[in-house]
Length: 144
Image (tube, rainbow, N blue to C red; front, side, top):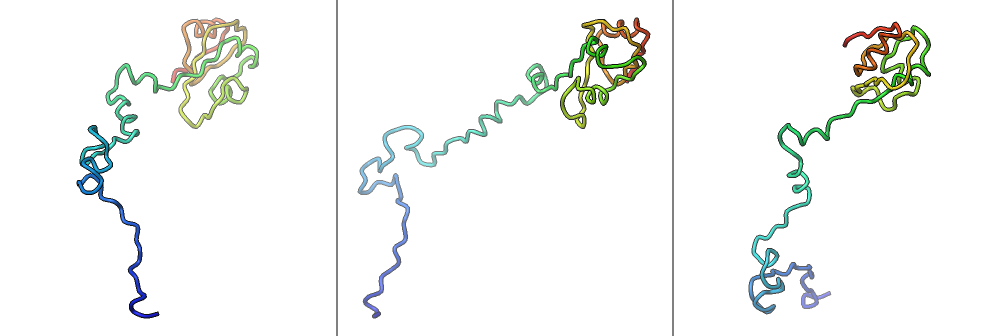
């Protein structure tokens, strides 16, 4: 190899667009609009998603609340024995509610169905009709 055989390495150069020259007046940018301007920047889609999330508390935030797991009194009649405790753990063990109990799950007992067994209800919310049916059957409700 001799000195006159050496050539500079061919690096791929980025073409400088939009500065006049041999590409015409618009230099490959088209005519008008945001994409033809200098310093154009298209807003990322993530920012639009973030802007749609409400900032303050209020009526829009209700959709993010976790709903309570609902169990009817008639289901308790079928699954529980007389004098048994009704707690979120026992409801999960008997298959009346699904999900992970490591999270704070609220459970609400509703008054649909008949109840004849004496039950002790703990750590559950009750509707008025469910509360009256549990107490009428001889059971008790412990407040949280």
